[in-house]
Amino acid sequence: MPGDLYWDDTLAWSERQSALLRRLAGGERVNDVDWEHVIEEIEDVGKTELRACESLLQRSLEHLIKLHQWPQNEAARHWRGEILAFLSDARRAFSPSMRQKIDLADLYAQARAVIGVAEYGTTRSAAPDCCPVTLDGLLMRPADLGGLLAQFSGTGPS
Image (cartoon, rainbow, N blue to C red; front, side):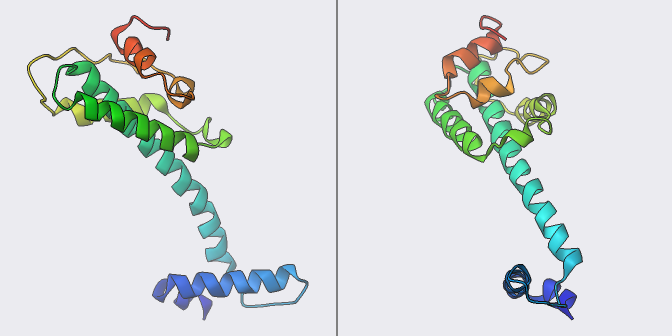
């Protein structure tokens, strides 16, 4: 039964299903397509891509908060590099249909919660209560790290 292979060996299942779908696309009649799981997997591909992009954006926000709160920390240069790498990866992972699904306010709240328990030195500026940056600002090419940080301080455009 195709469903058993789905649980026992996902690679073998996916290879079998793709072969069956290719035969079906070629006009051949096939009866063994595991439609329930094929549909579920296709839906999961999109969800996985969205979660990956959201994760990169959240990591970017976490590092922006760190850099804002502890600008003199010895790790600040590293955080800058991480932000640029995360934002670059987020731009590559982003697709237009994600715009309506990404809740930047929620990602920012999660980032604040993660960083809220951290202590990286004595100089600590308060992170804004609400996300001070926009999705477009985060996805800008090239990344404007200075502009993003200025928005955390309330001195940049929002």
